[in-house]
Length: 304
Ligand SMILES: Cc1ncc(C[n+]2csc(CCOP(=O)(O)OP(=O)(O)O)c2C)c(N)n1
Ligand code: SF4
Ligand SMILES: [Mg+2]
Image 1 (cartoon, helix red, strand yellow):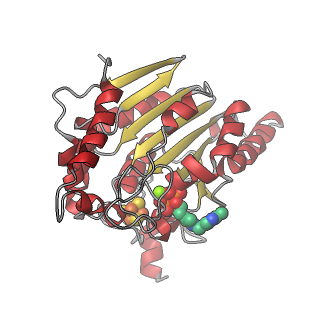
Image 2: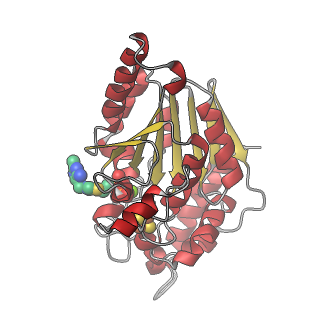
């Protein structure tokens, strides 16, 4: 690494992640959300990151974060967070760490870890009422290894492991509901293209204690196959069409922070993404599109 680059990284403003020449794709919706989340949480944080795209942000011994960063295996980030939290608590109890120097422990993983490999460790952490924030950036597949399907992949999306004219045969798992069933302090869905909603939820989570769980839908130009300039538009359409409900769980209640009125057809969202190309070419697959639409409609039925 050149001296010049090291200097550039050291000179970054304290709450800025980027500008370090990271090997991330342009238009990355996960990075867009993470950047905004970091702007709210700030540098008094320890990020515990499971293997995935965001791991590429940190190249030992450097990290664009101004706080600390710990890398774990895919299934283990919440267990790693427990160890970090325990170490901080012991230092606080022994008077070796002043309360004002305490750090927020933040797990950062992709959907492959959150929806799949790491779900058991996350469930255990919530059972133990671990005091941490979990941020899952959900790009709906194993992005770092070439977009194989995960259990966050939406129905019919083409992935590296679900090719042909049918795409992924399964249906996206409702992780928000699974997490909320554990009755943690807080669960919320966010997206980088709705920055005010995102900032309000992260502020709220920051002011709480216990497990605070965040899922950020992360439009992914590389895995979803679209022009990076369309990331924000795709994020807006995910919310407007009702595909990505913005919601939060607190005190046993689920509240929608945005109820999309006059939802445009999901087709408008699907059409922009190459991973759904086979639904439109060579012939339109009206049955599959109608199935996707019906599931979205059924979700919103009765939600005022
Ligand atoms: C147990 C285990 N299996 C496989 C891998 C290889 N691997 C590294 S990153 C990754 C994809 C992770 O997907 P996700 O959590 O969705 O994050 P993304 O890559 O999409 O950011 C995989 C499979 C690994 N590190 N550990
Ligand atoms: S593959 Fe997708 S999630 Fe990963 S860095 Fe690229 S755009 Fe972001
Ligand atoms: Mg992923």
